[in-house]
Length: 372
Image (cartoon, rainbow, N blue to C red; front, side, top):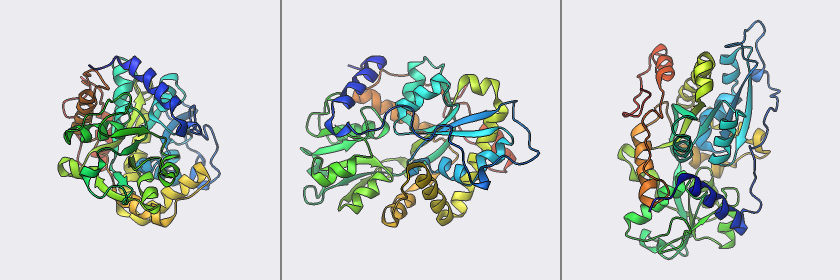
């Protein structure tokens, strides 16, 4: 039976707290909130004016390559360029629930986030907290295994497979895939024909090296970090989707902020569209820019043997791939992690399509889930 969403979130927190591997995981709203950027690319241009009278716009994202649009837009100074004299402030996050909490509290205004936390945030608030206003990335998720223990997909049965968090995007995807194999797994406990071990992405490589897990269904760059530790890619999630495309990162906004400051939202979306255009035209330079921002945020850059394959597996797109978000919600319902949600109105792509038209780019569709 599907669980009540608030109960699901409380149980998720309890499960995470109970896992020994997670004792070192970061908590709270993330790092570098309100930290100033010293690069000349980040400074407010002389003579520019504030947008919507705002002193700042607070932007959130993860330190994942699947959030490469935000990484590149920040490193290249695109957010600040479009915001004029309104300062671009930033906060980085490790998990979706903490970013949703920050959005709801007003600690951030706009954020890059995965589909499952966006769905949960929207449905838990009865459609009042957020809107998805754009796409960002597709792909970049893989099942990586210990080749000494697992040599084929059928060998996954009976093994310990890590996912980042109970009910997160990759957790739902793995549970759905396991069910398609005919295997039974209790979604809450992770026990069954396969044991699902919810493990923070920062800790997963160490757990893999220690033999605590036999594999992991994870986003980049964690997947490529496991390969660098001797793992083997057994399955690329993109192969399971039509046209090999599925949403892995969306852009969300507080509904109140969208209503009161549409010009600021437009500025951020302009920066995102410009970033994606530059990424796709200059993949090597963009990859280096994203890695430079990761180093600035975390103090450590990715090595080429991790960065190169990880970046190659991600497609950056302005299209939110709305039909795949609906499918991912259906997978969560099927797994028993979510009561059937009403996602009508979760998208508002009006401003994005305005920006795309101005750039001479094709507009995108909300797959029937747009604002009424």
